[in-house]
Image (cartoon, rainbow, N blue to C red; front, side):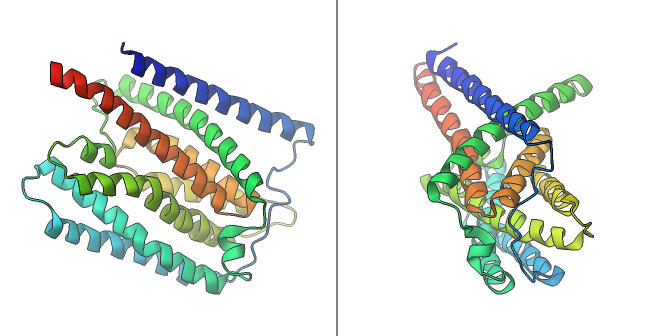
Length: 299
């Protein structure tokens, strides 16, 4: 196996190991503190977010996707293959959806949350503390998602040996020879910036908060928060059914992101974790492609 691929594989193992250590440390601390609900004492984030406002954000999401899909057909460069055209359409639709949902969520949050954007997304933690928490959350997410993904793919291979695992839309487009430089830039920019910001504002900030308000509360119980985290994580995962073998792993990822939002009271940490998660995937792909290029030229 080429040295670069071996190095990337070893770094993967190292990151997953560090993530396992983070998860183990969290469990040990939880055990020592009496095994109480880890969400107890989380920020309240007082708001008047209604089901109607949640639906408005959802409809803006849907509108952005629909408009983006139509614009993609009009703006598609000549010479794109059928597979590339489908990837381009899905990518532009997703990116335009994020562009529209970000201001929509901020407007809704500015009106619905008692302390405005600070109560919705910014929180009151020190920057250093947020960065450390984001790094730990990213490592824990890498560990959990890799383990769940491995188990899911093993089960699929057992049940359907001939199943072909599809690539993510971003990687399909990056791997398409007919894709232009601007299309590649949009794919990478969407994965690194637009998707983490837009999805966290909508799923964790609006949707998770809205579901939490709908769940009946019990005195002293954090059940409504856990139900909101799990429900949002499932919806987040099923929005990515284009890669069915990643749905369970993304549900686990959504639980980590939702827990971080509830625990910290700030969207900065989930957004940073999401950016690091996507950024690592894109970087690994680019490094693998860079290594494969000389082989293609000399083959």
